[in-house]
Amino acid sequence: MTRLKTNDICDIPSRLEQYNQDLLVKTGQTLLGIACHARGVDEIKIQHQVKSFNIHVVPITAGQGIITDFSAIVTAILTFLGFDAHLADQVDITGIARSFENHANAIMMADDHKFVGINLNKGAVVDNSEATGRVFAAALDLMAKGIRGRDVLVLGCGPVGEAAAQTLLSLGGKLALFDTNLSAALSLKERLLRFRADQKIRIEPDVIKAIPRYGYLLEATPAKGTIPAKLIGEHQLVAAPGVPLGISPRGCQVLKHRLIHDKLELGVAAMAISLLA
Ligand code: 2YC
Image (cartoon, rainbow, N blue to C red):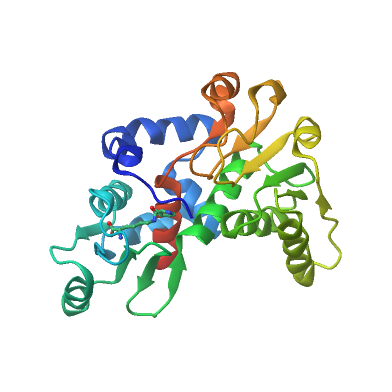
């Protein structure tokens, strides 16, 4: 899991309005709308519930410790979505205990291994990697005006790629998998077929040969340069939750409005909707 740095995320709060508009242009939905689509819930209904749903974000000092502004930026994203979100004024156990005492509906917190949301009434846990894979797959579905029946290549078969692959299958995508570690792709295929024995899932051993053959790409690797600019076609659509971005600045220029990438926003939005739904 790539550890974010403050300068990866410090511009997020001031750009939320613009990012929301970009998403609307690219997918026809806002940040909230995409997160609702990823959970299969009705946005209008959700909008009535968000303002009374109280989420505390608790900084955690364990391991490599606090990422400056990380919790404040998560809080800003939640507030932008309309949630009653608060940055805890205490860290670690004190902050968590205070959230329970203040009857928060949910808390969000991250150590070096997991970034989770916990619904304090239901005891349900939502994981950022799962939510991120799911919401970027939902965004690709919207950008494609329906991924059903389309060939889609997932690059990176870790926790984010796995959640994206599951979501793309459930949305009717014809799935292909790539990972630099072939056994990771093979074992993901096996896990996915346990629930969908009838599906056809291809394994692509050579990513350079494969990329030009897919109109829809989901880039979920922690590597830069996974998708070289020279392989990007006229009509490809790319959803890229992978951090750092696996596409070069040149590749981003070629893709323009055909690329969705961010480092926290969509994943946090999807976590919050899952906590509420
Ligand atoms: O400020 C804090 O509370 C820190 N304990 C937060 C550490 C987050 C470490 N994880 C990451 O940087 C990202 C997550 C946002 C998702 C994957 N990696």
